[in-house]
Amino acid sequence: MSLSRRNFINKSFAIGSLFPLISMDYARISKFNSNLNSNASSDEKYWNSIAKLYHQNKEFINLESGYFSPSPEIVKNYWIDFVNDINESPSYYMRTRQNDLRETVRSRLAEYSGVSNEEICLTRNTTESMNIIIQGIKLNQGEEILRTNLEYPNMIQALDMREKRFGTKIRIVDVPIHPESQEQIVNLIIDAINPKTKVLLVSHMVFLNGQVFPVKDICKRAREKGIETIVDGAHSFSHVDMDISDIGCDYYASSLHKWLGAPLGNGLLYVKKDKINRLWPLFGDTQNDEDNIMKLEHFGTRPCSNQNSIIAAIDFTLNIGKQKKSDRLKQLQSRWTSALKNENNIILNTPLEKGQSYGIANVGVKGMTPPELSDTLFNKYKIFTVPINGSRGIYGIRVSPNLYSTMDDIDKFIEAMLNIAA
Ligand SMILES: Cc1ncc(COP(=O)(O)O)c(C=O)c1O
Image (cartoon, rainbow, N blue to C red; front, side):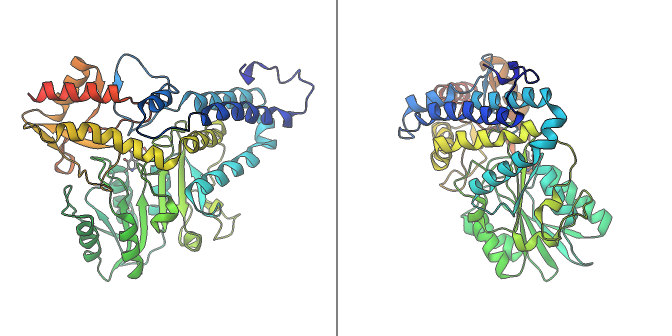
C-alpha cells in the first residue's frame, strides 16, 4: 500500500512514526533485492532479473542513459512515497524531519564515496557543483586555470565567465581521443602546467565518447607540483570502479541522476576538508565557519523527496555491488564494440582497453552523418542514441546502455549497425 493513501491527519500515531514506516517498507524490498545478489556477473539470468526491476518504454530500446538514467522501480516508489507523505504534512515535515534526513543522506553518500561527511554536500547536479568550485575558488591576479579540450560545455562556459568577470586566464591542453597510453595523457597535461597554473580541471569520463582520463595519476602529479585539481565526475560516479577517495583530487562533482540512478535533480559536491576555506560560496552564507562544507549548500527550500531517495539508490547499487555494476557496464560495452570494431565501415571513437572506458562508447559509420545514423537507428530499428556531430572533431553516436539493458538489446543494436554499415 502506498503510504500516501494513509490518512496522516486522522492517524493517532505520532508523526515521527510515519517515516520509520517508509524505512520498514524499504527494508522489505531491500531484502528481496539482496536475494538477487548471489550470481556471477556473467550470468545473464541474474542481469535480466536486474533489468526487470526497471520499467521502460517498450516502444524503443534506450541506449542513451548518459544524459539521465531511470531509477529502478523500488527507488522510484521510495521517492513517490516521500512526495506523497511530504505533501500531506508539508511544513511539519520541513520543520521536524527535513534536516535529520538530509544529514542521513549526506552521511550515506559520504560513506558510499569513501570520504568524510564533512567533505560532501548535496546539490542539484554536476553543473551546480562545478560552478560552486569554478566561480568560488580563490585565486590571485595572474594565476591560471588549465583545462583539457574535451570538457563539457557548461564547464567551459563557467570558466570563460570567470575569465571575463575576474580576469582569471583559462588555458587549454589538447589530449587525443586515441592516446598511445594513459601515461601519454598524464604527460601531456602535466607538461602543460606553467608557473602561473594554480588549478587543473579534468573530466573523469569524457561526455563525448566515454573515454576515461587517468585522474588518479594526473592528480598525484599535479599535487607534487602544488596544483589543485578539480575532477568533473558527471559520468564516473557509480560507474567507474573508483571511489572519490581513490582519486586523490581536491574537488569533485557529479550528478546522481546519471549512473547512480537517483531521481532527477540530485548532485554531489566533494571538497577535501583542508580546501573548503579555499572556496567562496556561490549562494551567500555567513552563518557557517569558513571550513564548514555546509556553507556551500545554502540553497533555500529544495525538493527533499528527491534527495531522500539517494539512500534508496545507494542501497540498490550496494545490493548488486559497486564493482560488479562497473564490470557489467564494461561487459555491455565490450559486447558491441568487439562485434563492430573490425567492420570496414565502422569508426570507433573510444579507446577500448581496460581502464580507458567503461559503459559508454562512441561509434560512427563511414558516409553517414551522426544525425543520419541516429535517425536511422531510431526510425528503422527503434533504438535510441545521441549523435555527436563534430564536437571536438568527433563524429558518431554516443551509446550508453545501463543495468536496465539486456544482452538481447545489445545484440539488436549490433545487428542494426551491421545492416547499416554493410
Ligand atoms: C562531463 C559532464 N559534466 C557535466 C555534465 C552536466 O551534468 P548536469 O546537467 O547533470 O549538471 C554532463 C552532462 O552530461 C557531463 O557529461
